[in-house]
Length: 250
Image (cartoon, rainbow, N blue to C red; front, side, top):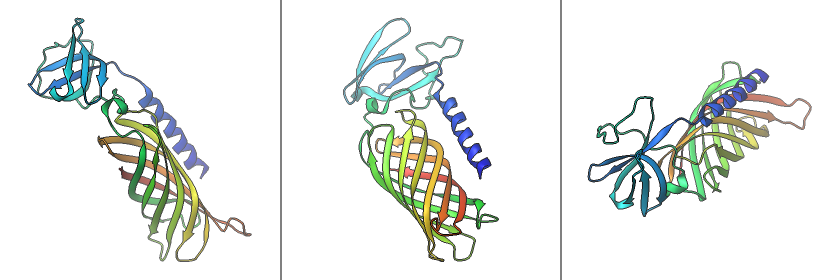
């Protein structure tokens, strides 16, 4: 179990370092009339206007009703013409913050997640595999933090072994942008529906979140979940799993 936790925590820090590095990028504004303006967004008023400065120092201001898309592209050592009209559009700019795009910042937050699980330490872990799903309802405090109450079900290839955890779920997104690496953790209560055993449940994971609509995002991650059944009796039972998380928040 210690080896698994070490691998998960080490991987989390590596992923955080990778995504925290900034690359040289410039903004690209696509207008509905077909024009493409490349430079740096110096001002953006959500729902009203956008101001962009090009490499020659020219400044252009456009109403948001004129704008089709705002994107970014990496700057290579080779100069790129400001009048490039390539039809291939780069991905939506990851450097513009969610608050500037008018995306959801605070209020009710919910998430449905599901995915496969495999036993990783403790009682029943050898050869155990199955799946899990959970519904989380909570509150989003800003672009980075969420806190909620989760209710889930784990089911396995072991006859009659079905777990029901109820837990507090907390999540932190490293960047207030459409795409962000993230960590999550949870602690609560778990019961085995077959044996009637109950105990303490906890999980820790890392992954990423990506908004595809102003109020909806997809989540992918890897979690380690542990349980200690009958913790206050003479022989507590430990069971751990590695979970692949695939979810959607709303």
